[in-house]
Amino acid sequence: MACKLCGSSDKAMANSHIIPRSFYELLGEDWQASRVLENRPDTYPKRSPIGIYDPGILCVGCEATFSIWDDYGYRFLIKNPGLKPITGPMGIIFGQNLGQCDPDKLLMFFLSILWRAHYSTQGMFDWVKLGPYANRIKELIEAGGGASADTRYAVALARFDADPGEVGMLCPDRTAYDGVNHYRLYLGNYMAVVKVSNQPGPEVLQKVYVRAESPVYVVNRDLRSSKEFVLMKKILSQPGNDKVLSKLMD
Image (cartoon, rainbow, N blue to C red; front, top):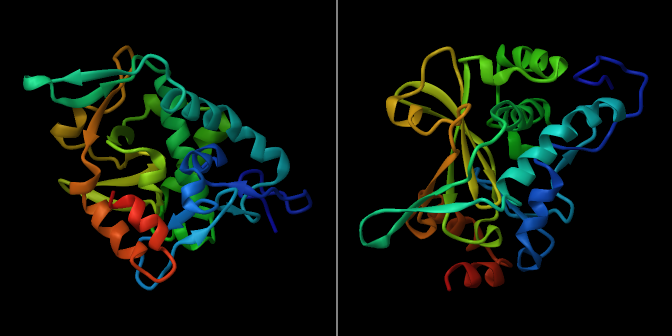
């Protein structure tokens, strides 16, 4: 089995987490050893105490390459002490200001997840198919970054108004906004919308894409009015999921 990064077939392979393990740990005990919700037909929540991993993507040496981006993404999104609510009329909170970030590290965090998902044989990641962008992102990984200087890539963030344990871990998927290809990644209570396209993103997203020398703005989303919530209820209504479903409906 060959490493998808260095190409070597004679090195020990790692159990590579596509989504970093630290994000699964946010789900808490109520998810009964971290239930992963596969938003595909005829699938059921999976127990995954340490998260979804794949032994066929990276060798042990190349696995370490991703730690700088995985650690940064977790620290900036989850351990960020500078998070400030953005309020509108009547004091309604409609977003969060996370402060300034290292835009290249943050974008590489999301792109490196997509790259690992592209090569994974785990069903959770079936909808991530990067095509020719897999090699282009590989070049960025080998170079140690550079995504923020490439207009083909961008990311905007949203955040559900619920704890990560209520949201769970949905499968990433691909969608188009105004005809422009994006992937949606679900990490704890965050949703990242990642542009992977030669085309410029739609104007509404360009206003909130992460950029250098600008605060990172996160749009609030009401979990219970979202289509993700409808999907979660459908999945969790299957036999054996009563405990999680009842907590979700509180």
